[in-house]
Length: 302
Image (cartoon, rainbow, N blue to C red; front, side, top):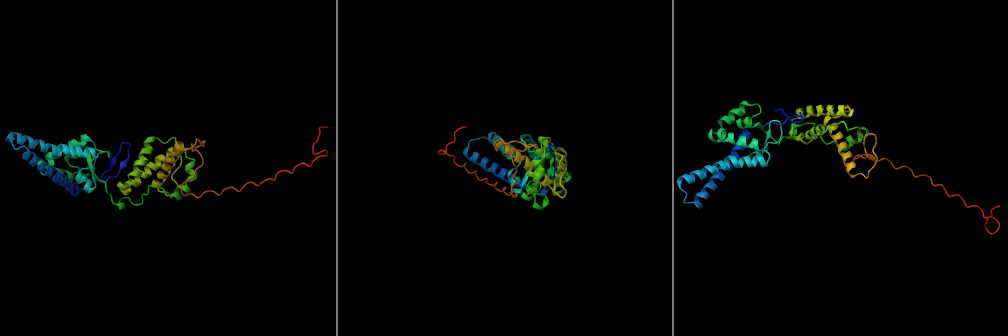
């Protein structure tokens, strides 16, 4: 397994694709591309029977470049690294730092692939994949890309729970409300969201190490250490949920006052038991009316 580092210096435990799955994906792509090439070439030669030999050869060469270079580049660029064969096998092309591949990466991969896969029957690509620790062929080395697996078995990340259950939020509610999140930089929030969103694609040990490091950074910024016995991923999810709750209150609340931690209004966690309503205030009976005075009930000033 290769360690990929994102722009936020977060190590991603993405699993590189093995040579058999990559070879099968390339084979599926080539079958479709050559089938389309032969069908279109045959159709054009039937429609244009008056072409001389040179024109027919030029047409065939243009069609070959189109289907073997232009089409793969276009498909990988628009699908962010997924061709037909890779989509069928759950693979994707990413940059060496884990980011999405672009047009330049797809173009370099396609041009080098014409020589190492088509003209040389895939021998250099297979040797390079066997030698490389990440299974990268020559096109990946020149383009700075890597083919990774998107479909990771559920057992690949044991024990990593990213969505904090309601009982955890309820138990941590009072501590979360008092947190001051103003010192947490946007980059740290982004790294936390990336980890929680991609937990199913990460190796279990790599995800745990990342969660522990991010939880330590977040605890240092907020001054609230990870509670004993709480998984660091649950800690990150709880604090992130609190931040989203505050943003939602600021966006939809009716201008309620903020407390010392910047929380608007009372706090109600999902699933938390509501406090009993206070008993009604005792009703004070009205004072009895004054007795009427002599002289028809009117009193004159003395």
